[in-house]
Every structure is written in C-alpha cells, then in structure tokens.
Amino acid sequence: MEKFVVTGGAGFIGSHLAESLLNSGFPVTVIDNLSTGRKENLDGWSERAGPRFQALFIDINDTDGLRGAFADASCIFHLAAIPSVARSVENPAATQMANINGTLSVLTAARDAGVKRVVAASSSSVYGDDPNLPKKEERTGRCLSPYALSKFVTEEYCRLFYRLYGLETVVLRYFNVFGPRQDPNSHYAAVIPRFTTRLLTGSPPVVYGDGEQTRDFTYVSNVVEANLKAATQPAAAGEVFNIGCGGRTSLNELIAKLEGIIGSGLTPQYEAPRKGDVRDSLADIAKARRLLGYSPGTSLEDGLRKVVDHYRHILKAADGIS
Ligand SMILES: NC(=O)c1ccc[n+]([C@@H]2O[C@H](COP(=O)([O-])OP(=O)(O)OC[C@H]3O[C@@H](n4cnc5c(N)ncnc54)[C@H](O)[C@@H]3O)[C@@H](O)[C@H]2O)c1
Image (cartoon, rainbow, N blue to C red; front, side, top):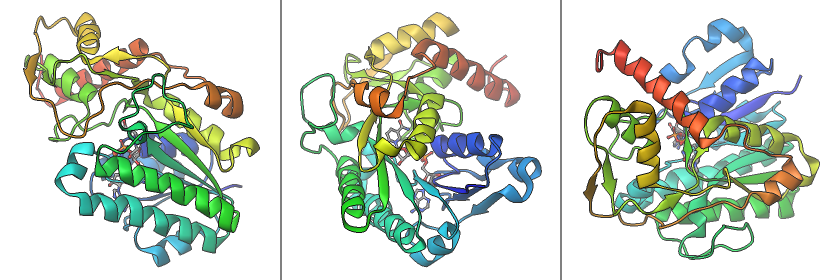
C-alpha cells in the first residue's frame, strides 16, 4: 500500500490532511518540529490507526532524518513552514530558514529517497503587488513580505527539481484557509478564528485597516481535497495551481456573516493596517478545475457555521461562554 508523509502534519492544515489519509486507510508519517503545530492535533491517532501512523518530531532542515522517513513513501505533502506574513516581517531570517532552506532540504531528501511526487504548499501572497483580479497562475507580482518571497522561492525550487531531477512536484497556492484547529490566540492568528472567538466571548473583533480589504476564504476540507487530487493526477506534475473558492469577501462582510450566525450585537474596532498585507485577493480556480478536477465542495457560509460550532464547543468546555 502507498505510504504518505505530511511535513507540518501537526499544524492546522497538515493535521486535517494527515487525518483524511489515515481515515482512508493509508500509512502516514507526520513530520513536525512543533514550532506552531501541536501534539494535541494528533490526539488518539495512534490508538485509531496503530502502526499505520508515525510521528517524527524533527526539523525539516534535518535532511538525513527526512531521508529515512521518506525511504518508502510515494508522495510527500510539504506543508511545514512559518506561515505568517507578520512574523516574516519581524524575523525574515527565521522565515528563510524554515521556508526556503527547509523546502530545499525536503526536496533534496525526496530526490535522494526516490520519492515519486512532492505536493508543496505555496500561498496567494506570491501575487504581491499585482493589481489584477482574479489572480491567474501565470501572472505574479513583486513580493511584499519575506513570507511571500519564501513561497516564491519554494515554487521555483519545485519547478527546478522537476526539470533537473525528474522529481514530480505540484505546487498549490492556498488562498486564506480556515477551519477547526486554527489557533485563535496567537498575535499572528488568522482573521476567522480571531473574529469568531472574539464575537463568541463578547469582545469586538479587531480589524487592521478599514475592513474593505478582500480575501478568498477557503474551508480547510477544500484544501485537503485539492492535495489528494494533486497527489495522483498525472497532468499535475510540474504545475502550479490556485486553490481557493473563487469568491471575494471583505473583512467587513465577513464580520457581518459571522454576526449573522453568532448574533452578538458587537461592532468591529479598527486599527492601523499591518505591513506586508495585500489589499485584495481572489483566485481564478479554472486551472485547478480543469487539470486536477478540483471543486470547492464546502462554501464560505457552511464553513463559517462549522467553525462557529467548533469554537463554541471549545469555549464552552473551557467555560469561556455559557
Ligand atoms: N492557513 C492559510 O491560510 C494558508 C494560506 C496559504 C498558505 N498556507 C501554507 O500552508 C501550510 C500550512 O499552514 P497552516 O496554516 O496549517 O500553519 P501551521 O502553523 O498550523 O502549520 C505549519 C506547521 O509546520 C510546522 N513547522 C514549521 N517550521 C518547521 C520546521 N522547520 N520543521 C518542521 N516543522 C515545521 C509547524 O510546527 C506547524 O505544525 C504552510 O506552508 C503555509 O505557509 C497556509
């Protein structure tokens, strides 16, 4: 049976992907240094999957450690990264080490171990200052943050490893992914978990900027589906794909949608915009539909309802709300 490796598998998206592979009966190894990932995301997996599940808590820059783990794997899903624009602006060297050096280490170990395919996580941030909407794969702009640059280099390394060594690489550019297991408390937290938990606990959501900036919010199960398709579609090798919903929502509209579900009666609090953030984002997903057979099965509204239920449950368990 095919074996899969998920780097960053203790993180938000990686843990959903690894869990889906395990639930389909495949052997899965998770590699994670737990810098932002959490062991609790893997709770109960060993009991459920037995020896089919392995977790290696190492850094992806440990190329020798990776080679052993990759030895009999058919596909590596590479999601490990420091995933924040704001953190990259504060500490570009750390982002370079994890996201650029780390990707080179993963690709080198995959090549050396004879792995067939690597599916790597990139980001809509590579569109940078390109003002055109919707974003099409072939037209990127200048990077606005070290994080965007790290994903640009990730993409270029993937392309080179396919050309130079025949290692099949597939790059997926995610657009603002949301869902359960996103950390709402970090200073760098994404907007949906932050807004949701603030509204649920009776605090106004904090918006950086005027709230009219737009994003293509994508529920995590859509991204998992895209990864599974990218692992198997022959035509995907060497390609880059946008993975979003193909819809555009401003932060003010997002808060209104969450308010429609939660009904807290709170209004947002506005603060100065953050450096490095792009203004608008909207994915053209025609290429992913055509070559991957990708179709976002969960809408923004359905995803938001699931997320509100998830955080309500967690907060109730922690006595944060009645
Ligand atoms: N969440 C989004 O909206 C979004 C959007 C675009 C791209 N992405 C990309 O998707 C991937 C997953 O992001 P996420 O949102 O799940 O974030 P996350 O922080 O939950 O997951 C990243 C994981 O990588 C691990 N990691 C970081 N550096 C590592 C290293 N040097 N060695 C081993 N493990 C390491 C972390 O511990 C964490 O578990 C990242 O590559 C991110 O850049 C995410």
